[in-house]
Length: 273
Ligand SMILES: C[S@@+](CC[C@H](N)C(=O)[O-])C[C@H]1O[C@@H](n2cnc3c(N)ncnc32)[C@H](O)[C@@H]1O
Image (cartoon, rainbow, N blue to C red; front, side, top):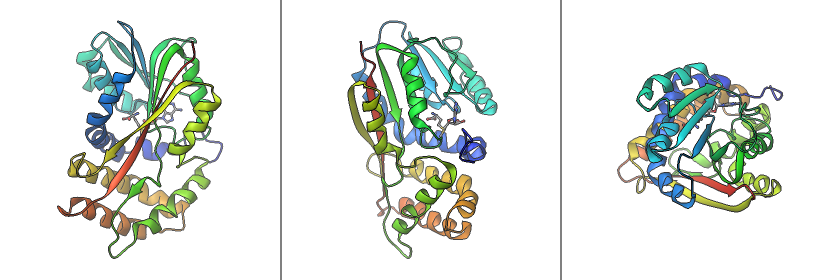
């Protein structure tokens, strides 16, 4: 499993992931869209969405930059098919291709902006992928990376203490899959080692005060549906116990007086001129 470049292939292809990506876009994009103001892009910019999934964000990028050409790449054909049919009205300015982000087909220095969201926590060797993204980005171009970090999630304590879940499941899961579920903080060192300029991070705050409660609840529901089985197989927490933690966390979010928060790091950096 450790040598597999896509250890979460099953979860990524599951129907729960399609729901998850829609809920994540609804919760995160309104805050994230404002962060693109920090990139100065040329007219007819070329944009890559690396690991684009169902095209939720590649399509939003095509709408945000009406003159840009946007390419979304992923390895799951079903996601790409869904993206092509959902966003046919944006073609050919928006295209989707099956490519691995470990080995992109693009020439060096092709893109003005390279986006990679919610991907590098799920794969081994995130440093190799980031180096590949830098390769295809032009000098002076930008990288925009959402790197998840499973200690940046906080829920209220009720019958269960959710810290017991988040402090146990992710370390065991990452050890079993050869991934880094704390890449949200570790990405800084990788960007620095790649000698990128203007490294910055902003946090999208997914909580009931900054995002719709229902979108937040749907994200956690989709994680439950996609991951409880694997959590039972790979971590000391049984599937049944994981289900109970998820049920409590979802109820916490849906409680009109409840508060929970997911801090989502959005990194950016510039390829040196
Ligand atoms: C959680 S989804 C995020 C999708 C999209 N970036 C978004 O934010 O909506 C992660 C995606 O990365 C894709 N992925 C994983 N390994 C990949 C690889 N080596 N090359 C291309 N895509 C990959 C998965 O297939 C999945 O669609």
